[in-house]
Image 1 (cartoon, rainbow, N blue to C red):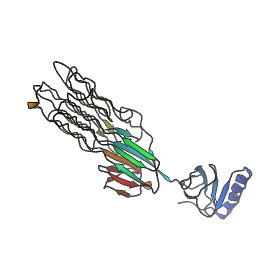
Image 2 (spheres, helix red, strand yellow):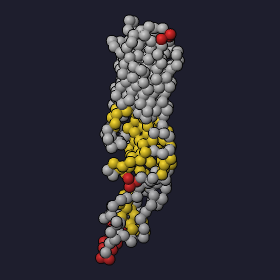
Image 3 (cartoon, one colour):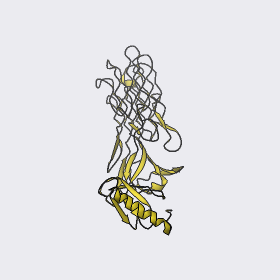
Image 4 (cartoon, one colour):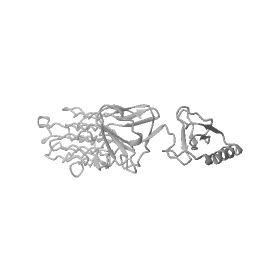
Length: 358
């Protein structure tokens, strides 16, 4: 609670006002505190509450969204923005019937000093404007590639609203053996399937990694899908394991997400595991884990014939996680996010699309 000045303190308050005027500093004297809509003429404007004696200085001047820092005895300034940490993971790509593992969905992280995809630097937290509705989109899982078709990419995940546009790109779906010149590109790239096209797909800088290259004769091992943390393994000398995901403690405990899908083979019963964090295995194959943005496992054939072609698997859907001071949490959202607390913070986990009003 702000401490009101004693009567004797008003001599000092008058001196503060006089000193500000003598220094040529613009100032306002009011019986109340400033608000975000108290529009000062310039940064450095001084506001003095003649009732409490508290003093504020304008540090950001934007009409209707001004920031005032308390320089007096009280605590707490006037700030229209809610600093919000985020983890935005897109949907993972599907695994190919031909063998290629799906790539993990794009992975963007701003919590503390944790890394983003491809082991890139942590991003800056988002500044959500008070009272503004922000749209959260959770990317869908990429579907498996049916018979001779490529698997599909995962859907994008995003946090979008006034002043904020954070978009993670869906993971790449694995390609079939006779389609395309390489594995597909995405948040993380898919592995490649053989047939003389040996290059894994590319990931996006700051979001993911590349998929593994395919092996040629006589193994015909497909590459693993790229994970958020490491690239998918190449199939040149062994089965292509999916790339590993990344761990984050934004929810209060460490959880690894966004692993790449494992690759299969065309002529051998050799099926790789997915990467850590939920990557689907080619042995089964298995889907990427739901709400981790992981890639699906590829499949393949035991004899090189479509007559015994196994089916690939789908990726895992994405997730969007927000973390802010509980004192700044509005309590207004749609889409039924899971809400919890950790220390002085409130955490929202969106496993499906929705909105949050800051």
